[in-house]
Length: 143
Image 1 (cartoon, rainbow, N blue to C red):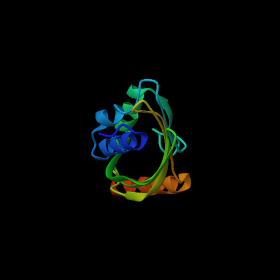
Image 2 (image 1 turned 90 degrees about the vertical axis):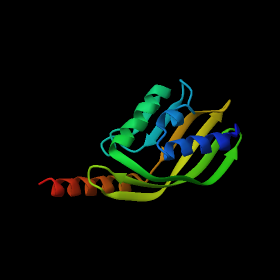
Image 3 (image 1 turned 30 degrees about the vertical axis):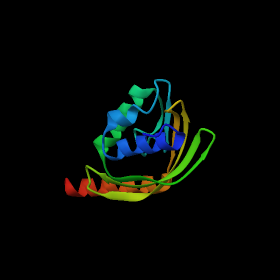
Image 4 (image 1 turned 120 degrees about the vertical axis):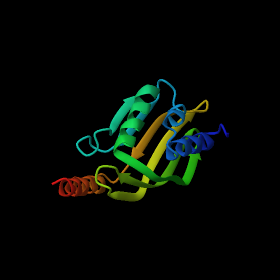
């Protein structure tokens, strides 16, 4: 495994993509900052958490609601220890069966082979509309 910033992010993303959440969380130190920039009224697990244990808990919360169909790094640029990337994703909402796919942006800081700060940026209004669709679909199927 590569220990350069790009290699570390690639390995962490790969572990997450295949569902090995403990392995993905192991790429973060105990003092790491992890953030998903979407309002919590849209995604309850969004926001900022600190520390490997809380990051793993966030991964598990996401996995409870969504099945990862695709989660792959696209363009990657590295400057010093900051890695900027786009992620091509597809998630299936477990309760409704609805699928969302698209591209998100990640900015990660990697120091000494670990991701110390991870920021995930989404089109919030698109996610909000998707979650409304999921709610309507779920209500329709359960009425």
